[in-house]
Length: 157
Image 1 (tube, rainbow, N blue to C red):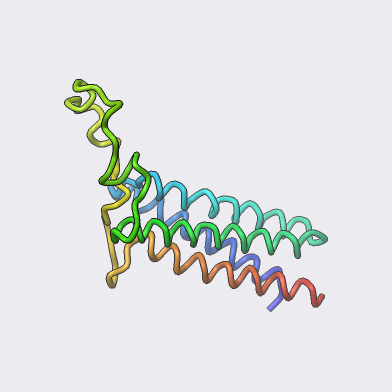
Image 2 (spheres, rainbow, N blue to C red):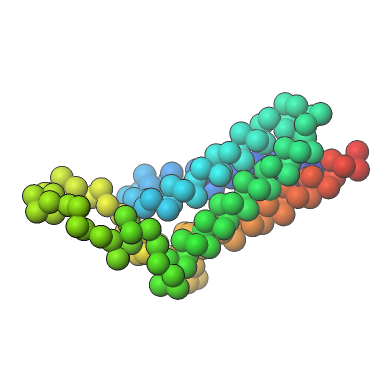
């Protein structure tokens, strides 16, 4: 395979994961703060892929940057998985140990904010025992390997 094909697959994979996340969101699975964190590197990978395809002279360094973006979202997915499984604490703003000291009584009783806080330490969907965050990590690390293969192939040409 050519580096161009590998970049298309890798960037397309990030785009597919983003489309999947947005589809789940449209189906009523509201994302938490950490879910959003996982989306940003995928968006970067899509942009990097487009740039690499438009600028063949910069394909090799951009492929390495794409690998970094994919690995970054993979690491965030592993961190999120650990928060969901209780292996380590998550951000206090969206995990069970949140500090409510700065919230007034009226804010706590308001029904306007009930649907706005999605807990990062709760699994809303899973398949074969893996949450969306876990599946994102697995897929993202696979995409990082594809980016690295593109980087190696670009050196040969």
